[in-house]
Length: 318
Image (cartoon, rainbow, N blue to C red; front, side, top):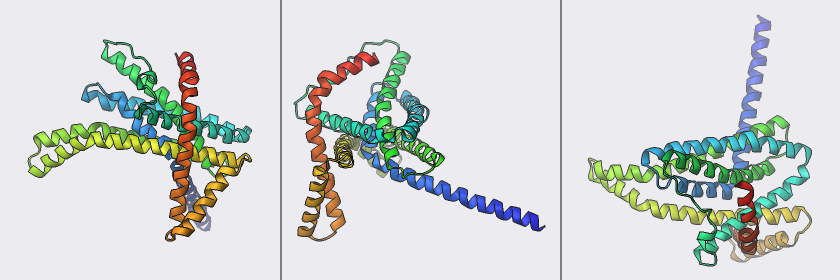
């Protein structure tokens, strides 16, 4: 009897350790995933365009295909690569992170340059060929979305990996896998809701029994274009903020301290002058300056990206 009680105690202790490990993984995954906010929002803002022009009953299947491809990108390709990099060449993580940050700055600045007319949007999109077969077109669109997702997923996984505190190999692997699953579910779940919201609103407006229901449906339909536009603006701002922050912090870690220390000093001075919630003022000022830096760097990178890198990438990717 005493042996059985001891065994039960051991099982209970193991269960507590396992539960604590799960809690640690979840907490670290949420913290690491939040660091990739810019790429995550951009992913959610970009994805809905891949279902434009299709029948309403094909929108969710296409999103499901893209979501599965995104999960494969993260778990099959990027997670092992990230863990191997962390184990054998951790010194490469910061430069790669800065490269991803530069890409975020470029992409955010490119969108702003298009919006104000500095760049012709037609020259930044890939030429599309006419395809009569809807199934073939669907496969082509999904494949293109998965390729784009690979770049964004690489940014997300690299940023998340850098945010995970040093731990055992299996804890890091579990945390990174949790980040991959969590972000994929959040992004493509949000995309599915955004894509189908206007259909649901139209159904409510046309078939709702109550006036309130019909009014709500009409409001949803009218609000969707503005929501998509707002999501694009927020995504662009988040890309510039996160990209600029990555570059500034990376430069600080590599020995160039001037931008990081100047922003920190100015944030402290401003918080002292204004008073009030010091930490909040510092955060807002720092985020704004990171965004300004990201925009300036991105505008410098736009000609390089459009004239050199994008044509080269298209040749390599076919």
